[in-house]
Image 1 (cartoon, rainbow, N blue to C red):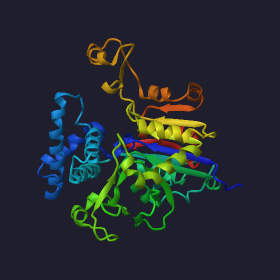
Image 2 (cartoon, helix red, strand yellow):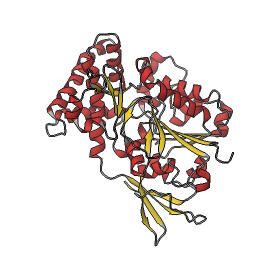
Image 3 (cartoon, helix red, strand yellow):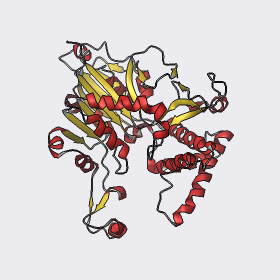
Image 4 (cartoon, one colour):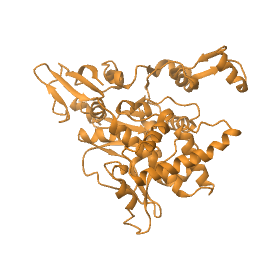
Length: 417
C-alpha cells in the first residue's frame, strides 16, 4: 500500500537538547535554584520561596550522611531520588516531595525565561523543488535571495513535523520523540509551527484542541502535567504549571472535589514503579516506537553509566526490531571529565588514587560508551556519531540524508546564538 507507514524515525532527547534554550544541567541545577532562593529580587513569590526552603532543609538534613557515605547532594537527580525513597518508606511527609518537584519545575521555568538569544538556522529551498506551501508560517523568508530563517527549535519542530519533506513522501513517514526532559522547549516549538504534542497519557484532560499531532513521549513527566493527589486524574495544559503560582497552589480537583493537583514528575533515577499506573502507557508507546523504528537519533543524552532504565528500555525496544538500519548519536564533546575517567586494570577502590595521579587512566568518550553498548557488527555498520553538538547538527546538510528527511532543504547553516 503506497500510504502505509514504512519509514519511522525515533528521536530520543536528553538534557543537552535544551541547553541552548537555557535549561539547566544536572551539575548546576541546585546552584541555580539556590541563587533564585537567596536573591530577594528573583521572580519567586513568598510561597515559592518557602517551598524552595523545604528542599534545602531536606538537603541539609541529608548532609549528615556524608560522614559515612560518598554521595553528591548537589546533584538534583540524587536529591530527588532520596526524596522519593524516603517518601516510599513513609519516613517523609508528602510536602517535601511536592516541594522538590515544584523547585525543579520553577527552576527550569525561570532559567528558560532568562535565556537571551540562541542559534537560528538559515537555509535555501532545494532547486529541485519549488513547493514551500508546507513551511510553517512562523518562518522568515528572503525570497529575493532564496533564503529562509527559523529559530533552531522551531526548525527542528518543523523537521519532525514533516514540513520540509516532499509532499508525496510524507504519507509513508512517521516521526516520534522520546524525551527524558521535563521542560517544554520542544512542546512550545511544535505549537509555534502549527502542531501539538501527543503525550499518550490515557484519560488525561487537556486543552490541546485539534491541531495535527506529533508523538512526544515524556518518560519522566512534564512541567505542564498535573495529577490529583486523591483520584489521580491528570490535567495537561499548554503552558507550564509554575507560570501562575497562586493558581497552582489554590487549584483543587474538579473531578473528585477532594484532592489538590501536584506536578507529575518522575525521578530520572532509582525505582519508578510507584508511577507505573500513570506512566505505563507512555513507556509502552516508547518501547513500541523503538521496536518499529527504522532510524533512531539520540540528541544530547550522554548515557550515564548508572542509568539502567535507558539501557533496559532500548534493549527491550530493539529486541524484536528487524528493520533498524541507522542509529545516530548527537552530542557536544567537551573533553575529559571526572565522570568519564576509567582506571585500567585496577580495583574500584584505587580509583581516587589513580584519578589524582592521572596515571593508568584513560578517557572513555561518550561515543565509546555508546559503542560498548552495541554489538560490534551493528556498531560498525549502523552506528553514526556526531560530536559537534545539536546546533551544528541542524546546520549540517549531511545529516538530512542520514535522517531520510528534509528534501526541500538546501545548504542549511547555523548563525546567531
